[in-house]
Image 1: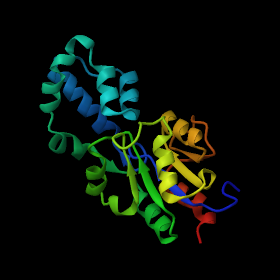
Image 2: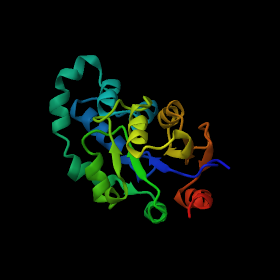
Image 3: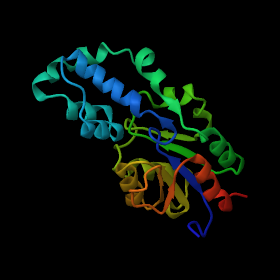
Image 4: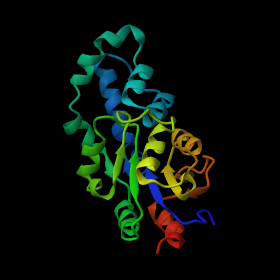
Length: 211
């Protein structure tokens, strides 16, 4: 049994778990690159920007000699109009969150997003489920475990009784460093305490810990 002392909380990554945002992410950075007259991202850059903060990602994909034009290129992208509509809610997410909430399991989001996290969650009706939304503005970005530690401190729970659900190596490293259990969501290649394909399977796997 993974949680012999019971399940005391679940922390969810946002992009790639709660939200299918990979295409919107690619769209945003490619728009910035286009505004700078640069070619679209490589597959390696797409993978990097899916996991890291906006600041880290822009530093990664924009050449040093074009960084002086970055502010103007970024401002030319209408995020709400052009990017947000490309984001979709993960199938089964609401049903899983409702099940956990009925069981009185504390829920949190830990994301490397910065200013857009709460507004995007609210757009999809997810914000009321979470007692904490930890962003890269409130704690060091993943893989640093600071955000997980802050959530555990707020909940006053032991890390080994908490599950972190994520889809990237940064999620796994943050969970491992903080001492929580880790569920790899839709990513069989990640080392994890649990692998789940989707929210239906996650709900089934957690069922034995809900009363």
